[in-house]
Length: 94
Image 1 (cartoon, rainbow, N blue to C red):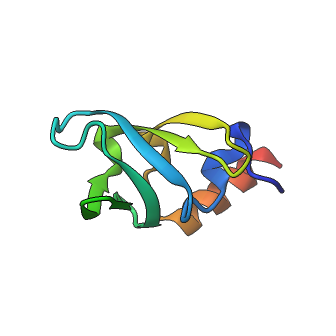
Image 2 (tube, rainbow, N blue to C red):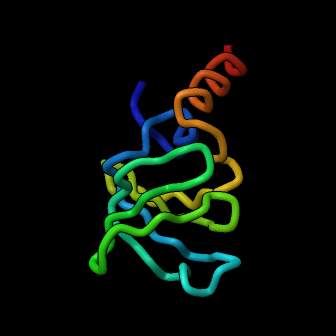
């Protein structure tokens, strides 16, 4: 299955470019970089100033897909371990 705006939460985000457009922490807003990895509550971004760990629950992200499409994602939707999130979303769509 190809990654698309409709199914972005079912896919691996590592390697995609993310831009934090809004955050409850003003120090995180407007940061961008490549997603190095994610855990249950955090996303690690490789920014021009180094690696930054960002809490998913307090941010809104613009994520650039491989085809150049930009998708706005609420970090709360991404909460949970990536492998569990993928399984849960896939099972619900069957």
